[in-house]
Structure formats: C-alpha cells, structure tokens
Length: 579
Image (cartoon, rainbow, N blue to C red; front, side, top):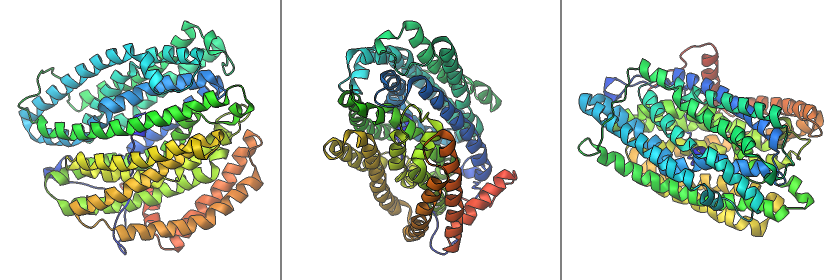
C-alpha cells in the first residue's frame, strides 16, 4: 500500500494570471528536456489502462470473496496482499521515490563518476531488498498479527498462509521502483506507468482460473481453504508483481542503461542522498504506525459484528481497500501523471538555484491540479454508493458498505493531490526533513480521529470515520507544508489559490445536490442497471454544471484543463510554458 503513504498535490499562479497547462522544458543545464503535456498524456494513458484493469481485478475478487465484514476469507486475503506494499513503503519505497530522481539527474551530469554512483546504488539496493524479503517472509505470522485485531484462529491462519505467498512481492516492487525511476529521470515516462498492466493481467487471469477451479468462496469457512487454493490465488498475485518489474528490462536497454554490479557506498556522494532517505524513512514509519492503528480498528469490525446481521452491512479492511482504489484513480490519472513529469524539471531548476522558476511552476500546477481533481472528488462524494453498486456486486452487500468510505475519503482528495506536489518540491531541494514534519501533522490528525472513531460512531460507520479523519489530516498537512514552502521559494499565490477554491466550493454547493437528485430520480441503487442509469444521469449534471459554473465564475484554470485535454485527444503538444 505504498500509495497510502500519500502526500497531496496541486495549485498555481497568482490572482489575475492565466494558469495554463504548460509544457515544461528545461535547458541543457537543468536536465533532460521533457514536454510535460506529452509526458503527462503518455503516463495518464498507461495509468488509466492499469487502473481500469486494477478495478476489474477488484471486481473479480469481490465476486470471488465478497467485501463486507462477514466475508472472512476476503479480509484475510486483503490483509495479506497489502502487507508487501506496507512493508516496502516502510523500508524502501518512499525513500527511493524521493531520492532517486534528483540523484539520477545529477549523476547523468557527472559522467563516469555518476555511472559508478548508480551502479553502487542499484547493487546495494537490490541485494538489500532480496535479503529483507527473505527475512520478512519468515516473519509472516507476527506481521499479520500486527495488522489485525480480535480475529479467530481460522481466519488468522488463512491470512498467514496468504502472506507467505504475498510478502515476496517486496523484492519485485523494489526492483520496479528502482528501474522505473531511472526511466523517469531520463524522460522515458511511459514504461513505468504501463508496466502495472502486466501485473493486473496476470492477477485477473489467476482469479479467473481460481473461479473455474474452485468457484466462489464468499461463505467458505477459512479453515476449509486448501494449500492449492491459497497458492493459486496468492501465488498469481505475486507472479503479477514479478512480471511488472521484469517488463522494464526492455525499455531500460533501449535507453542504454546496463547495470554493472559494484560494491560499497563510500566516496561516490551518497551523504546527501542518505540524509533525504533517512528523513523520508522516518516519515514513512510515522505514517505506517498510524496505519497499524487504522488496520487494527478496521479489522476489529470483523470481531465486533461476528454472528450478527450487522456483519453484512459493515465495512472492514476489504471495503477500505476498495474505497481507496476508487479514491486513488483520479489522483493517479491526474496528479501523479503531472507531478511525475514536472518533478524532473523542478529537480533540475532547484539544482541550479532557479528559485523563481521553481515557485512559478509550483504555483501553476497547484492551482491547475486543484481545479482538475475537485470534479472527480465531488463525483465520489456524491455518487460513491452508486459507483459501488455498479462495480462491486450489490446483491452481495449494500452499496453503502464501500460508498460511505469512498465519499469520506474523497472530501480530502483535492488537498491530497496538492500536498503531493508540494512535498516533491521539498525533495527536489534534497530536503527530507520538512516533509517529515508535514507527515507528523497529517498522521497526528489522522491518528487522533481514528482513535476517537470507536467511541463516537456505531460500528458500521467506523471505517468511514477513519476515512474522514484521513481527509482532515491532508487539509492540515497542506496548510503547514504550503507555509513552509513559501518561506523557501517565495510567493506561491496562496490568496489566488484560496480564491479559486472558494469559487469551486460555491459551484459545487449548487451543482452537487442537483446532480444527486437527478441520479436518484433516474435510477437509484436498487440494482446494477438502475445504479448505472442514475450514475450516468447524475454524473452528466455534475460535469456540465461544474464546467459551466466555474467558467461563469471566471475560474481560468477550467479552460486550461479543457485545452490540455483537447490537446491530448488531438495528440498535440498543448499550451506551452516553463517550470
């Protein structure tokens, strides 16, 4: 669940300036020349296909295992299959993502010494990941115990069996990140975003084979699962991650990257990278300590509702995962694609002390991302139950099981996307300390809310309450991070950003109730076809109303986003600009 170690993204220019969707470029001095609009389109298309297939895999999985607290095998597999993401995020993922791009940009300018730097970094990282994976696989039982609470022995043992097959994914996630960031730093963005397609295809194939061989297992006693059933379901999940890493070998060769094993870390400039990695690691540990609390609270719903009618209508860990998948879809398509392309340019500008360029690019993309992400966020708030009814088998569990969770998450989605960008600007300056303090703020608010949820809400609302606490944490973190970044790079156009936010709020206050009403009148959640009809009708009202309303209130970024989308559809370069 490396995605959970989230950040936030989005914002831009001053009042009165036109926030275009620029194609950021740099000169030779600042790193590889990258057309941000084109790179974003390539990444977004790969991310879209990957996310759609990921969604298909979750639909198939919920058809196999179910999604509520009553479906014990579903929650056991969910915990086990999330463990490698959680572990990888703690030990390596965030640090590698934060450190690699700036270091590779610098290494590419340093000739033979930079080549040696990368060889040593990759050799030690891959060997370390392999050793770590072996150790963590042997610790599968205590790891499952860490992330669950109150489970009976059969579902706990099943989760451990799944984990023995799933934890080896840690190594393959690490290799994927290492090689993917080399491609990103050198301007080859597509393969990194398209590689997860392989993962999803393999996982879906494995689940379909499982369905043919064993049928649906929503009500099967966890103790009745055979080793063959466990190996087929969890083993193909790990095989998919391995394929995701292996498929990057060909694009790496195309850009001329070959790994020469070199040992040792001294004398090649690792000190600054190590400092950033250490602070990033500390922030990730804080986030994951909070997620231990989140996972325990969510998993406790299984024990609290066991044997009662509430189990069928109560969200647990599986519902959290499904909600988070929907939540991350617009963020990944919009914010991650844009920021990944921009980050290389910001790193180059920061390396050459171009503070004005960093500030201008950050302003521009912050506001642009806010406008672009607010619309899908509003859609998830308004229609989370309809989306759940369409996608996740409404005959097996009421749509509110996932709908409540994703709606509560989506309240903070625009701020999450903005914070995602802001944090990476700090990393461009090789500053890991400030993002760590930001993480303390976001994690502290989230933890406080999560701890209070069981005392304030009925059990069927616990997971939604956790999601709402997460949203509050992102807002708090964005406020703090923006203030600190302002001190470093200067004017970030905060008043302009807030003015855009206020106008978006006015538009949504009018449009969302109308869209919800149309959706309910057109369909509802009685069946999948009715939910789909309501979603299409209500969604059309929301999109048209949002675009028309923001244009009427002169939110210039709306037109910039529309121009960018039109340019992508027509395969043009888009509006120009520089970071």
